[in-house]
Image (cartoon, rainbow, N blue to C red; front, side, top):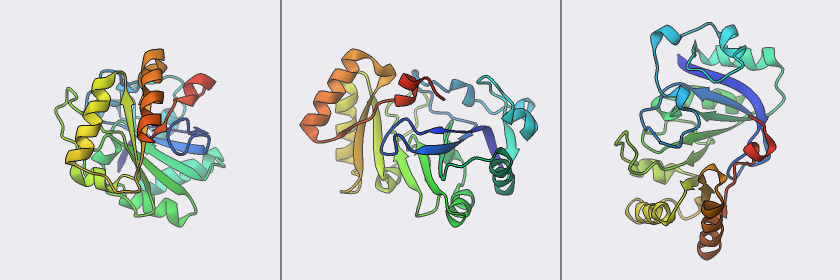
Length: 222
């Protein structure tokens, strides 16, 4: 059973798949503790917050309430909602706290492309066809180490930055735990702050990396 905080359909706003219609499956639970996290309601997993699926799907605000769902429950929910997007983004929280092999394999077999957004601090268990976006959370309060295996599995490394220190940390991480040669690297300014955006643009040009903007925040969508 997977602990699901929310399921919704929208446009992917970040990274390589920016602009792609997507179904987001957000899992509950995360021990990383990023200070700027905009989904802190997904951090804690309390049994008293386990609610029926229909109530979870009816939530109108961000809360720590979640539902325990099987893969078949998730498929039934997608069908009941009539979603038309064929790209599924599994996020959190920290989705790789869970074994996602069954879910991603079933989605791929049913014609969906799949993507996982992870901090890189847990082993990545998913289908080979799944696009893995590692957003490495370096020196966070949770004290968790970025796994070399996660960096090797990453199709995309999307790193949030606010200052030069964050770029230096990424370069050190890539030197110590290299990614695959074809892994795409993107910098994402934290909270779209002007100085962070300017630094990200300059660095992307200098390193031939990509710029990732949180376009869903500009558009005012989820």
